[in-house]
Image 1 (spheres, rainbow, N blue to C red):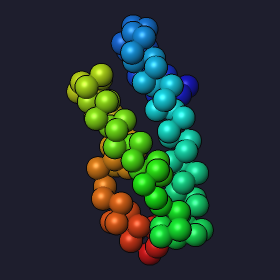
Image 2: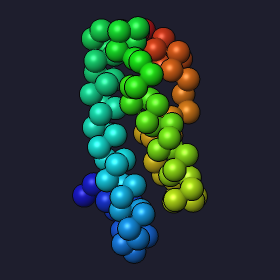
Image 3: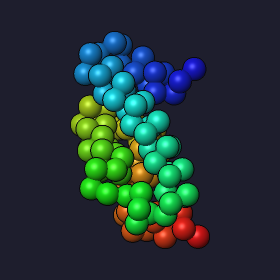
Length: 94
């Protein structure tokens, strides 16, 4: 079972949570693909102001507002949203 859908079920079908989780799942797929591109091309070519890192930061803020303490279970989102892009670039290059 998808962990994002499991999380949404904990909120009893709230529409705002459902919409958030749908966007989160799409972002997750984009971020995984983005990380693959970064690994191949390097961050200077792959990252821009419109890369999934920016969306992740917004989604993390929304997660904390919508989900409250349960947002802390979104480990991948939190890691991508709170890690400075430059730090991630250096880590992915190594």
